[in-house]
Image (cartoon, rainbow, N blue to C red; front, side, top):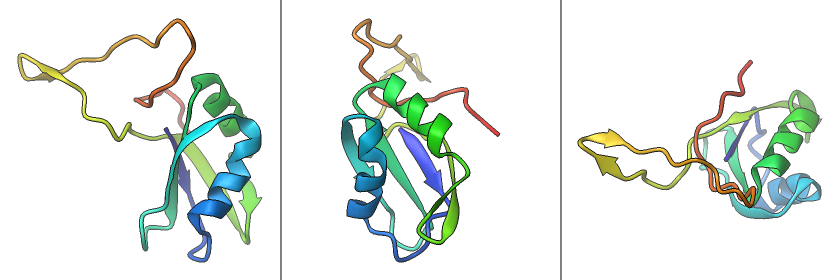
Length: 103
């Protein structure tokens, strides 16, 4: 999941979807009300990585957006009280999670 920070308040989910769609197949787009940010989940991790590399610190609407890895919206299973992480499937499918991309 790609975190999109710096969204102007007038941006709606359809606009965010249209902005990211050229970089790969999207499975989820969400803008929480009043937060100035959004979340975009791609089907494939490679597409999310590419979108981050191209769109980070670019103008969207009237503001510069900042992109980074966001948390997955799914709950990870617990084993002995600790969250379990599974390796990415060999198909390259990306289902969200934590990344090492940062500023």
